[in-house]
Image 1 (cartoon, rainbow, N blue to C red):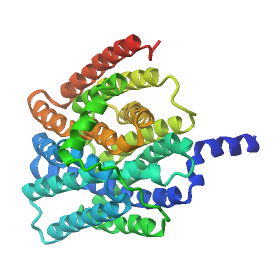
Image 2: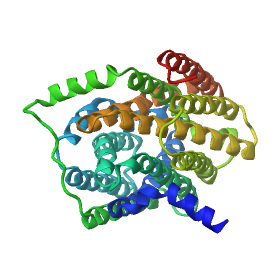
Image 3: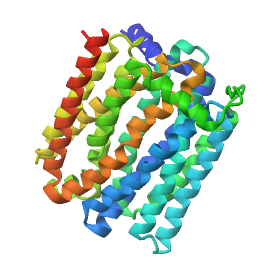
Length: 411
């Protein structure tokens, strides 16, 4: 039994054979704990000050809108510049943004509009960071066959932090205040900088061919949307992100008004979503290759939609926790498998641009969904809004399956 567990662990964590990846994983884990703590604190404080789901949607919109506008250009730059140096810049910018939040909070000057402005700044930084960071993983994996495993482990890192960070934030807010979460997040970026310094990376020079950024962007659009499988993967992910992912923006409403709890309830709900997502990422990390990928994406999207519908009408705390775990599992398997397949289908010189379009679909559509979700929640109520979102996710999954059957990818 011990030998079987050892072999299973060797398969599950095979990307850790790369020293640089181990450093990357450790630094990002610490940083992401702070990031999730700040996310919970911003959402709770905004709802505490406004008592309006529309403000939650507006802040979510501001933090994610730049992904749609900036990320395509960031993908082109990621294919051309030194990614480690660029990561130093983005991590420093993240630190300064969190420090500004903390300074304004303890100066008693952090208004809702300041939170919107700083969320917009966070979105701009994120738009550059995501394609650079995900492309950088390819550079720090010694065995390129482990790239799929590294992507899945990255998802486990995000969601392990998502499990712990929100729960910790909920208790810190209840015991102290929101400002402590902003401070912890600012300090956490030091871990990433140290890990980058300790890495031994040979810079990979991107291919420019004298092209302008606009030409590079046009090439990326033609490359991604000219590939039918890539196109349908991105379309389904964009739909799920637009209608489904804003459920996280509405969680403060379910925590306080539906389940009758406080900040600790919000932290537990977000942590439960992270637990499901962690389970999903470990499920993918244990797989070898991308066989049956279309079927997995279809089933994951169906699970996500069904769990959202059930959660929207649950009025029992423990039932809601179980359902949000299921939603997190479906969302993560859908997202991480899409990421793995897109990277496995892409050429090295186009990888940054492929990731930027993936991130645009996953993150760039979310702000519009957050804004719409906040508006519909004020109009219809949070439960009916989330039910509507879940139904649309199911419809999108069925349409995706029909397209994949035509291409012979789904039987």
